Structure formats: C-alpha cells, structure tokens
Length: 384
Image (cartoon, rainbow, N blue to C red):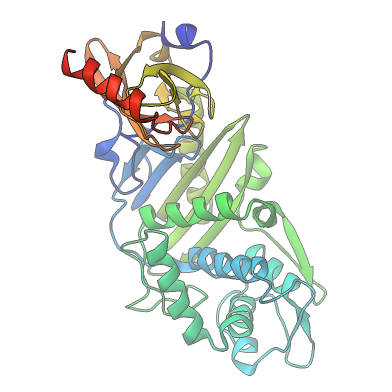
C-alpha cells in the first residue's frame, strides 16, 4: 500500500540512515543474506540512500595501497575548484617524483607535464610519480601534502585513517578502513561529478607508453563507471567500484582479495546482489507538501510540512508495498517557525514494527501573529 498511497517514490528521509561504519544501525527490515565474498574486508553501499546493504570487517585498519590516490585526487580536485592550480598548468618534475617507486606514468625531469596529464596518469595508470608531482605542486612537498590528506580525511568523517604519503606505498602509519574509503569515494562522486568522469577512462597514453586502467569491470559491466584499484603485498588486491543503473548508484569496496581477477569477481558479485535484491524508491520529492499542520500564534493557521531534500529508502524487493506510513506532529506547534525546522516525525512500519523514522520539516517560514492574534491563541490553548 505504501507506494500506491504516496503515488511517488520516497525521497530523502533518513533518521535510521546507515553509517558506512555501522551497518547494525540500518532500518529494521527483513535481511537478505549477502553472497560469500572472498576478501578480508568489504562492503556494499547504495549511494542514493546512503544505506549500507552488506558489510564485513569494515572497521579494520588496513594498508590502502593505491586506494590512497583517491584522497590525492580529492585534494587535487579541490585545488582546481579553488583555482589554486589549473589543468593547463605546467609542472616541473622533481627528482623525487621521477624516481618514485612502483607503478608509474613515466614523467621525466626535463619534460614539463601538465596538471591534466598528471591527473590522468594517476587515475588511469595509477602512477606514483604523478601522485608525488601533484602533491608537490599543490603543497610544496609530499610530506606537507600527506598532512593535508589526513586533515581532509578527518573533515570527511574518516575516523580510522592516517596518510603519510600521496601514493599508497606501505608504511606502518599509513592506514585506512573499508568504511572510511567508502566515505572518500562517495565524497568524490558527490563533490566533483565532472572530475569523476576521469575514472571511466579505459586507457591512457603518455610518453609514447599506453597503459590500461586496471579496473577490469570497466570492460565487463556497462554500468560500472569507476573507481580505483590498489595492490601491495601487505594490502592484497583491492578495488573500489561504482555502478549506476537509472537513478541508483551502488558503491563497493573490496580489500585483501587474492588476485587481480578475484577483486573484480567479488566486486561484481556485490554489485549484482545490490541491484537484484534491493530497490531504492523515492518516498517524497524535495519540498513536496506531505501534510499541513495546525499552527498557534502564527500569521497563518496551518504550516506546510515535508522534506527539504529528496527522500530515498533502500528496501528488499517486495517489501515496499507492505510498509505503512504514520505522521506525528509536535503539539502545540507555535510560531515563529523557521524554514527547515523539525515540526514532526514520519514513521514507517512493517507488521506493526517501526522500521524507520524521518523528521518532518517546515517548508515555509511562519512569523508570529500580532499581539491580539497571539493573545487569542493563548486563550484557546488555555482551554484546549
């Protein structure tokens, strides 16, 4: 009955919204057993609703390998947005960048390279030399850049992450978790949608050397459009992948798989599970009037209430029609009331049990009435 009664998808409600790091706080809905995943830690997130659909060992600190470069890219995208650097800017290659260990895009000290080329070399080819060069042009040194990476991680809510380099080379104090890396990947997609397109590039040629993107899913799944691979002996094979089908976007994090092919297989398994066994309907549109609530001591008698953002909820398939909706207003609701102020709660129940609650918000301001209007409502409230 729920979707038919609403006649609209659910958009933006989430009191019981699931933290990537806390899957136990998900809505109390019937569980769908996830597939077996051959990896040390992993998770599946629906980015449309921000709900975690399946997870294992997501808070364990692990070597992030080249998944580190997601933060290097995030800071580079931020610097571009703030016009601290430009895509066309020529970057002088330092000896340190040139001699960077591990995967490389093969930049050279006597050959200027642009910021745009470095971004492609880092994102597509996973070049450690490109990562160091970007760090140096943005912060002056890789060490200073790594400090900025950790500060930005803290700002994004990555509570179990510390960076000491821009590349992902192993170090005892360089670590993150699957949950934190999911937050970071989601932030790139949310904050820099235009730059995110770089993660869908399948190969890149620089210095007459063409290298493929190591994300195999770009070739095997038409819905996958990013994001990043990683490998060190300590980390094992890692892959963060994102796929979009219609309005839904899923994100997977797989860390500690046994091989290059295994990380792709396990990631695909999670993506298929999320799309096949869950739906993410929009409950309400942004600023849609859900109800009109009585108001006391205001210039108007009623207040339009709803949600100031689209409200989505991820549900096991077949559950949506069984949910029931109930609303409860704060009473007495007295003016003045600010736009966006919480004025009530919307509850979703299944078989009599509350599975989710969302705060109803004022969709308009409600100034106080004049002195006589307030006095009259005071009298009415006294006898109410």
